[in-house]
Image (cartoon, rainbow, N blue to C red; front, side):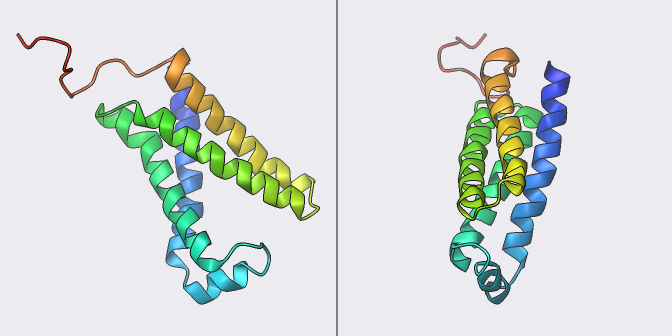
Amino acid sequence: MNTALWIVQGLLAALFLFAGGTKLVLSLEVLNEMSKQTPLPGLFLRFLGVAEVLGAIGLILPGLLRIRPVLTPLAAVGLVIIMIGATALTLAGGDVAPALIPLVVGLLSAFVAYGRWRLAPYRGSSQPSVFRPAN
């Protein structure tokens, strides 16, 4: 289960890093042109880009570095929320088939969140626990 979660986390991190990085790199004029396709303003798209990049980082680094591993399922939950919004906006535009993509990505993010919380949580941490006495 741990291997499957790492594979899904890596794929989701690459996807969100690309999507969010694109929203961060593009100029506001281009983002405003993109906002003609969706009812979201360009600055909100920039905010979503920041959230997606931070979510991608949160999927990988806490488990890799063993520092605050509880952040991985929290990052996955944040990405689920973003994907719920993306699915709703796509469906509101009258497009059913393209709404399947953010729906599937959201379900994969939910799988990571549940998997890292309940099925295969990270064991150990480089941070000492407050409740564990030092030897």
